[in-house]
Image 1: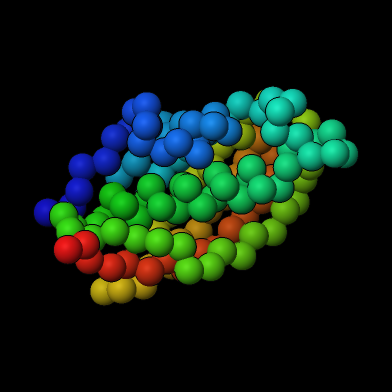
Image 2: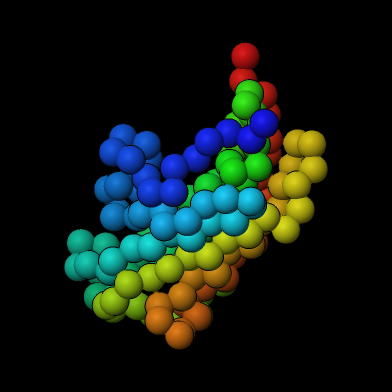
Length: 134
């Protein structure tokens, strides 16, 4: 039986996500959507959204999508993520849509797309390791 996963992150569920203002709006069946409101505190020295924030959206979105497919005693962790950035962001709301491409017994491959309105901001491909808790 797959684990229950909240559709919206409750307080304390993901402290780093909460720090940057990341919120899940949908999770289930190997997919997730998270959103983030761009704000000045997340800018790099050039006055645009720091790439690490976009990366964090992809990484966290991947974890959420995969988590929806895990069994009761399974957890997952990032092995690697490759990300390509297409646009700088100065304002607005970003959305990260993620899907599990392939899930094997211990490895999963996922894809995330980060958009700001109709504009593609970044695309990421990730590998996650699946392991059992004690």
